[in-house]
Amino acid sequence: MATLLTRGSFFMLPARYALPAQLERALRYAPACALTAIVAQGVLTRDHRPFISFGNDQLWALLGAAIVFVKSRNMLLTIAIGMTVFTVLRLWA
Amino acid sequence: MNWHGPGMMVGMSRLPAPIARHARGLLPPIDHVAYREGVKAMTPLAVAIAVWGVVTGVAIVNAGLPIGAALLMTFTVFAGSAQLAVMPLLATGVPLPIVWVTALLVNLRFVIFAAASRRSFMHLPWRQRLLASYLNGDLGFALFSRRFADSALDEAAQQGNPEQWGYFYGVAVVNWAVWQAGSVAGFLIGGLMPTDWGFELAAYIALLALLIPMVQRMPAIAGVVGTATVAVLTVGWPMRLGLLLAVLVGVTIALLGEAWRDGRVSQS
Image (cartoon, rainbow over all chains, first blue to last red):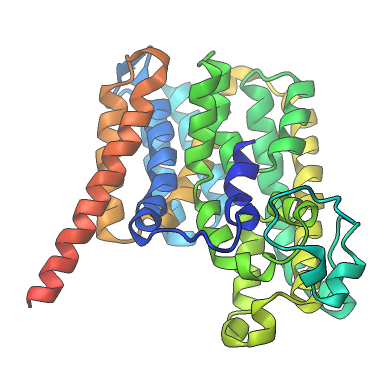
């Protein structure tokens, strides 16, 4: 539903409707913010509490993955290295 | 001939001849040379799409979604990032309206895609537009707009033509088939993997990789930092409502940052 509603939005609307410029600017930032909110709640919290500490293995793995992605732009390599960092930390601690 | 219901802007009588002939089917007229060109353009990307489908599939099944529901989701939703994003929410029993709004927010970029490429599809019958809407993914949009960027000023291209539709469907069919094959393979592999390996982290890493190219400039970076802060602080809120507040705060910060930057540029 949400897919069709957004992808179909301006395909389905009659020609006279256009996107207001201000709204278009806001829409540009919404996806990035939504993804950020999900990743932040997934990785930086535990049991419904903020969890930002040296003991957060997922945080280190995510930081490592971010560096790899910025350097390489390679999604697979990024996931592989991120998961490796996480697994090593998890088994080590 | 009034099959398309009332209220349509485009009446049959005003349709150009080649469209009128195809008006009853689900597909617009397609130029086969352009179709093959679209398939060819998409083929190098197919490996990446398939692997991405497998990762999404594994992550979804590992989050505890039954395979039947996962299959239903991938064929109806057909949006990798939205599927990945709502997966942790579904797994923790967040109310469906919140899940739905989240998927909507992640998918909002398609509103921009649709607004940008609508000219080529606007004059087609509504069933053909609906199918095209469903198939219009990120990579497809990127390829399509690059391929037809020069013809934006061309009068004939403004109305859409079989060459554009052919290319669009060539790209879209490869994208759809490869993605679904990858996802289904992922569901099957994911069911065999132990859940305590923390594979859901792979989904967060994948989302991060989607995210990074979106935040290359200052307003977006500021917005994303604001969002993350609010999201973490409000994680204890009921029904994950903090998620929505975080997005609102982030978008507002980004817009303010944009206005501030533009103000500085015009002063100097």
